[in-house]
Image (tube, rainbow, N blue to C red; front, side, top):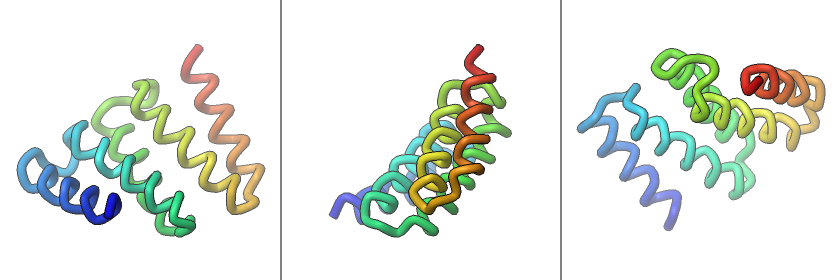
Length: 98
């Protein structure tokens, strides 16, 4: 049910605010987290990548929301056993927060 509601919210925000609006991107991020919790890691990774790239463009590389997306993506790839990629993403987050 949560996933369905998030998808409806995302659709409404895209239609009303546009694809790159911060609130729309928040919905993408939240949906990615729910999808990951449901064990669909590849789908979650795609959503996290989409959100990260859009946030970088809209908000910049060091914005807290961008870094939250980067951190979430790192956890997703770590869960898939891709530790080197996860470590690199987390290092980028740390550097950006300095």
